Image (tube, rainbow, N blue to C red; front, side, top):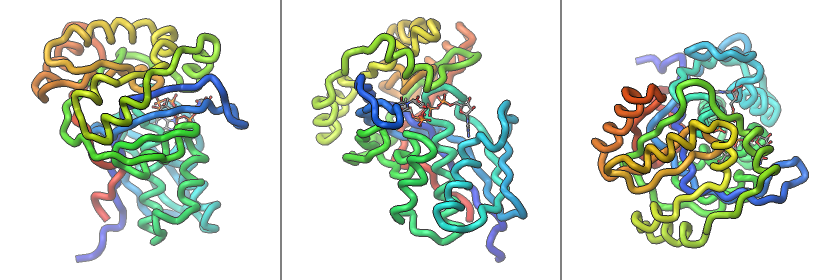
Length: 298
Ligand SMILES: C[C@](O)(CO)[C@H](O)COP(=O)(O)OP(=O)(O)OC[C@H]1O[C@@H](n2ccc(N)nc2=O)[C@H](O)[C@@H]1O
Ligand SMILES: Nc1ncnc2c1ncn2[C@@H]1O[C@H](COP(=O)(O)OP(=O)(O)OP(=O)(O)O)[C@@H](O)[C@H]1O
């Protein structure tokens, strides 16, 4: 059988089990951040095929120019880093909502980088890859590594990898329309900085794979900026805390999504259903995953 003329790459979302934003910034204006992230099984899918020129399309259609798409920017950056022309058609099936704090733009970029590595037969461990990833966005390196991990620097420097929490159920809920822009959330944080949640107990719990302790130490000091920019997020947090079968609730990254770690998949699905039916919010049940983007065809 002939090899397929395209590859398919899954691009899973993430949630931040811990996010601690420090008040000081680096020379680029990026905040120092400590974060523990895990991938989840809500995913975009990318089809990447060799073509005459670089073209990126999304379904549903994006309301911004293709050149601004992180997948396009990642392909251009790969071309520059490896001295080749990135001639591909990239079709992205979008399932991860935009401005949701679930890392959609970043995972699409990481999936593009992994896909191009595969097509150009580049070792993904090549040192140029990490630089390309960081040039697209702070969350992109996480998606290249995959398992739950502790990142520091601007949230783009990997410090420690942990055992996956694969299969742990989560309910995701966000306001139906709109979201929070990451840049605006950080700007709001500067105007009203918040204390750091405790990091060491979370890292110890991740090392010991102690689920009860991990979920007891979930925290995010960017959450109040997200809630200030979009007060409905605070309503969702309070509502989710009252739902049965919930172990922990937190805003993911810069919002607008809120996640609840649940006892069972059924509890996560019941929460998603009530959020949708009773409040008209966007909602989805998901599970924690063990890796970032994966090539599934090709
Ligand atoms: C909120 C998180 O998702 C938590 O994982 C990340 O910190 C954000 O990662 P991201 O979406 O990949 O962010 P980027 O696209 O790199 O940055 C968007 C904007 O957020 C702000 N930003 C981002 C990361 C960081 N450590 N400090 C910042 O101040 C900057 O204004 C930047 O222009
Ligand atoms: N592949 C992509 N998918 C979605 N949005 C993209 C993509 N590429 C670029 N964008 C731009 O990114 C903007 C959203 O980025 P932003 O970082 O604010 O939100 P996010 O979806 O919450 O991502 P994150 O969780 O990484 O912070 C969109 O409004 C759009 O203009």
